Image (cartoon, rainbow, N blue to C red; front, side, top):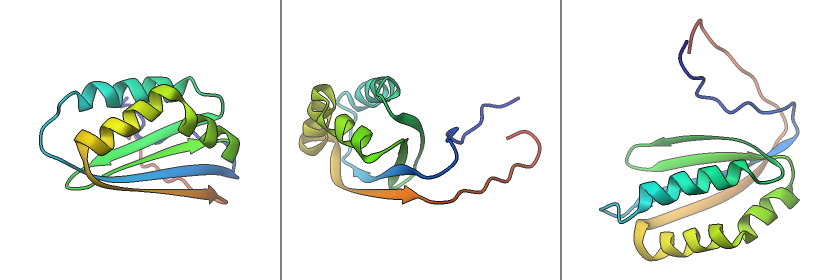
Length: 112
């Protein structure tokens, strides 16, 4: 069975942080930092899961129990350093949106 691509989230409501980005050319440590941020986020109180895709634009949606959990993640010192490096090295542009998830539906045909 393949790995499920969807985050396992609880019954709504919960929150989604939608991070849309356009990368600069070159890696300069980006892959390592992205992996470290994922590992760190998974240990944060209130973290529920993450989904990510990248083509010309990258979109990462992280799911959180509440706004306080999102605020703690934003304030994490190692995360703040990654944000600084992102602005200096890795991103040409990005946008962050925070939304309250009120409802969700799932369809899966066989093995996903």
